[in-house]
Image 1 (cartoon, rainbow, N blue to C red):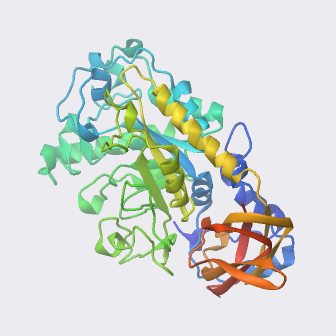
Image 2: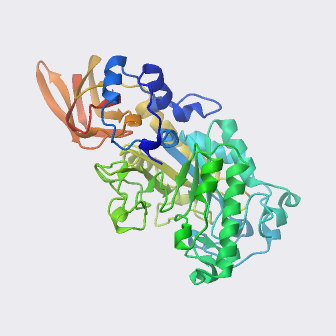
Image 3: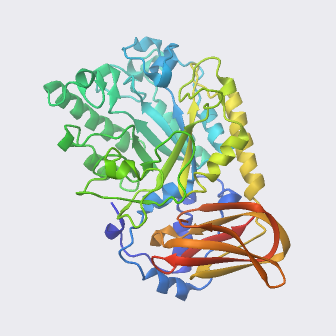
Length: 487
């Protein structure tokens, strides 16, 4: 769903704040991290006039707004092979295992979420079922899940525990599951019989199971920030399950990722921690389809499409254990040294959140059911680095129009500026520059760019300034700047 389906937004200060704090409002505890706070425009009339412009601009749904405001997330990877002590790259163990071997005796989802809190994350996702097809919630759909496990006498439900831990911590929960690989059903490449069974009775049987999996996960655990189908889910037209109506019925305020029918956000095209420059939240829509696999999308995954008709912002995903020639989404022994250093994570933050995307890090869970303490420590260092860098702006403002001035309380050395549009009204900025008053009437260009969107971080050599100007040289409609801050 895109902007034409959304009722008109009220153009007053209160509405501006409500939209901007959407993700925070879902949290049960705690305020937004200081590096995400912003001010609202002071001139409500100017905002109302500007908001009335650009009716044809693609705009996000409230669910997409909440998702992008979360900015940083963690995705927790755990599956039967890890619990059973069998390891393969990317969890590609292509055989069923005895469910009795699933017994993570120390499993503690509260401990998992410590990692998210340490990193300053606002959302978290759990692999309810991954490639092995083992269901980590109570289900009778087929006999391969926690109901058949030794763990907690077959009565446990990891999805329920995960969602509860998220909500206690003020973290928005999401659920991942795979319909493109499921070892129990011999699904590989979206189809049964290891990819060869499209259109067969067995495929139809699996399709109905996938629909019921969607029903169970979407209906049992309350509001979710997103449902994530790994590698997408095939549509009925492609011989796949009919899951979208089920999702829309049970999770109307959530984000769907993804199929040819609906892609509320897009994968950025790499697992290395960077998005393009510029990077737009809009993408093509060809013959009504929004496909990550179509050539029209593949060439725009990294940077989006300026003036594209479909709102689908980027997601930058990277495994935390991706350093030292290791790229592990799942736990394996002897890989504690593979966590990215803090400076690498900060660079990824700049090139993801700071490039109009979200940043989600893959976190491992070991065979005992715990996040390694070394990972929690590293994520804590990352969270602290964000706080130290963004907690105290030298000055900030917001406003409406093609030129916005920020007067600093005193001459201050700065080396970065954070820009944010109010994307509830679409992406409007097409070309801009940031100037600084460096002495007397001398103004110096500090940064130039094209896209801003939800957030853009401009870095430059340290310089002492007394004033700053954001000058929008080209725009699709009157710019509505949510935040203009210097650090």
